[in-house]
Length: 233
Ligand code: ATP
Image (tube, rainbow, N blue to C red; front, side, top):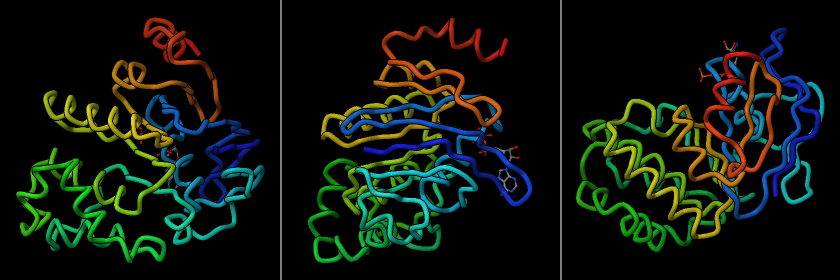
């Protein structure tokens, strides 16, 4: 579904990604793990068109994605749930959700999408009129997820969703991820919680220093081996 070929990208004179090639299959959950500064967020930003490529290309269902502006991504069926949630704190929960469903393709279905969000995240229904800034960390992450889902994406890109959340909320989050996977969505998950990420993923990439150092079926990768690679590469 998504293919990266020899991608190089970075920030001005600073190159971060070095010849990265990956393939994300339809309906599968791919996790990208790696130490701080490995380039995981930069990779997601490159897919979203937020960081320009200096080499290589990115294809969605065979069509070149790089060069497309970020605002066209929602209509192309791609949504990103950024690290740090980036919700609008001074707006209500419902207003945050409506913004997520305001792309051309979904605008007419906002009501249906809202109901689907509230069915998946019942606590957001209870809090629909509340300011987003008053939510707990877990609720804010759920809101960020629900907002991303409002455009009914086929490809969902999620950056470090469990960051800073209490263990019980992390459990809830991974239950939601399992549901999204069961719905047949293609998911790219960047996670620091390697154990949980491996347990839910179909495929795993380990990124280090902006390079892919491991690409394997998640079922055949052990935590011990990953830790070895993490510390000895
Ligand atoms: P983390 O887990 O800490 O988020 P990461 O793997 O997501 O790490 P990136 O955020 O992609 O890593 O950062 C990769 C490198 O790019 C780092 O060296 C970082 O300092 C640099 N970098 C990130 N954002 C920018 C920016 N806007 N301008 C310049 N350099 C940046």
